Image (cartoon, rainbow, N blue to C red; front, side, top):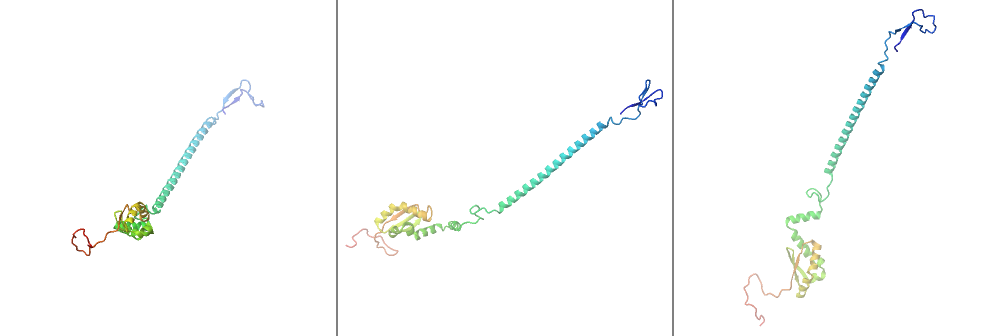
Length: 216
């Protein structure tokens, strides 16, 4: 600290306490005081060090966040790539892509027959072959299918009475036939009774003279 020395005009050595005497004068100390600016200098250094430390922490935090973002984006892209590969490899099941997916044999054969135009003939053959199983043995014993064209089934009855009976039973027979061989196979039934006797023989004939007494 800044101080001074008290020098008496006379001899002060006799005073054991070295207290100044009356009439003494104070001489300033020539030693410079270096502790005045020490506090301010230390405060500036500490502030600078704290600022540098804060900057370093902020930079480290930014770098860590950037690294974490890269890892997250990289893992997300990898997961997306794996998901796309799995989607490409996953089976879609029958029926989704008919060109590549496995299909049922019955559906495939049916589609092929329909494209070839053979479906109608196969349905017709199925109705004729399974006639007794479809309509029952009682009806099959008295009527037989003759033709199936454009949904119209023509039946031949063995008698006029059975022809009339078949006309009454037609709605139920249509339901049974469509349930057995496919919906829309038969839409209507036409029944024919027994035909009268014919005296035509061969491919060539001439018109007759009309009704007459054949056995007269």
